[in-house]
Image (cartoon, rainbow, N blue to C red; front, side, top):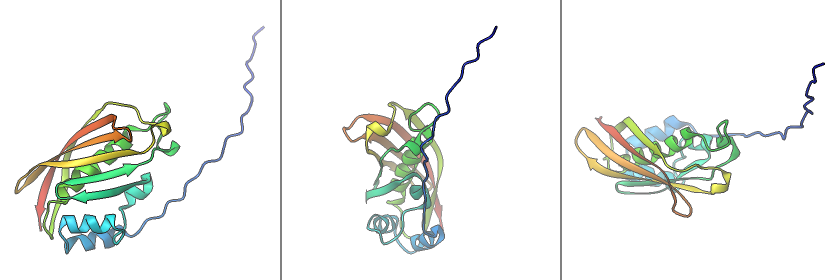
Amino acid sequence: MTETACVPEREQDERSRTIEWSDPLSAAQAARSRSGLEFLQAMVDGEIPQPPVMSTIGGRLESVSPGTAVFTLTPAEFHYNPIGSVHGGMYCTLLDSAAACAVHSMLPAGVAYTSLDLSVRFIGAISVETGPVRCTGTVTHLGRRTALAEAKLTSSTGKLLATATSNCLILNA
């Protein structure tokens, strides 16, 4: 005789999110007539909306200065991977955004850029219990055709959670 395990049905808590964002092309249009620093500061000040990706993940560009950009995010359950911690893609999104926007902050009006690569090192796990995280990108080299930036992701207590380096291609308009 074989015994069959009976697993009781559990009621699942319903979870949902509603996401709204502004037209990203109108923000991109505004970028063309301003220096990178002016454009990003307008975003920090709420004059220009944050990009849709930040609405999607619940992050935001918190501050910018020449050669530096800081993003913040409060980890939530919807950031989790199947093993119950924040998915590595969230780390990468913050690290890429901080590094690239640090580069953007150094560019004159009418000059664009694109990321060429991103090298990430995961150091610590992030969960809801971690609390708010901060990602700071800093330009380490700005040339005529390429730029290099580093980014560090830290907890609110200063614990290092991840680092990244990124190369960006400068696109003259």
